Every structure is written in structure tokens, then in C-alpha cells.
View 1 (tube, rainbow, N blue to C red):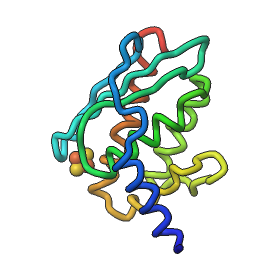
View 2 (view 1 turned 90 degrees about the vertical axis):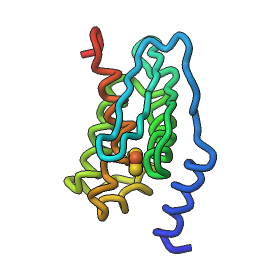
View 3 (view 1 turned 120 degrees about the vertical axis):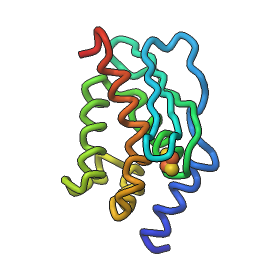
Length: 143
Ligand code: FES
């Protein structure tokens, strides 16, 4: 299977079977953001335990790219330290801005989204959940 096909499969799988798509009662961090280009909204919930992302979930609706990216994001940051999660968010953003060549060792399945860079109008779809995550973990007391 060609790499592009594989990436499409990964995105479709997360879209059809989103991981961690639910409310998170007791999650002390959250942020809701909408994509001004389409009005779709994503809410991120997170629970920090001892400096680690113990649980990260999302709710909301949107296109396949936004939903797949949110699903992949929750998997990618869960279990990481706050600092690692923020670093990964920065790396993902760099990839989506076309500024850094993605490092598959660190980004894993997230590299499946790099093809979106070719469609500038969809980049916001891919970074929406990450923007909300970054805001959630940068809130009061989380500098
Ligand atoms: Fe709305 Fe992608 S079209 S988030």
C-alpha cells in the first residue's frame, strides 16, 4: 500500500472510530474552540495527575480531518508529562506550518496528517484540537 493510502486509512480509522470522544467529569482542564472558517467546535478535557496527562478527551463535531486529528491528539498526549505534551503540540504545529520536517519517531501516526499542509484551508481543521489542548494546559496555574 502506498504511503499516502496508508495515511488516508489512518485518518479514516480515527474519524470512524474516534478514540477518547467523551466528556471527562472531574477533568480540571478544558477549552472549547471553534474554527472561524466553518463554525465547527471542539472541546478538549484533560486530567493532570502528578504532572502527567492522565486522561485527555474531546467532544464536538466537524470534518473528518478535525475529528481524526482530535482523536489522534488525545492518544498522543495521554501519559506524557505536561512538558512533553506541550513539546509535541509545538512539533505538530511546526509540521502543519510546513516549518519542520516531521520526525516519525516522535510524531508516530500524527505524520498521517502532514498531507493536509497542501490544502491551506484545511490546516485549521487539523490544528483546532491542538489549539484547544494548548489553551487548556496553559490556563491559570498551568503556565
Ligand atoms: Fe470545520 Fe474542518 S471544516 S473543522
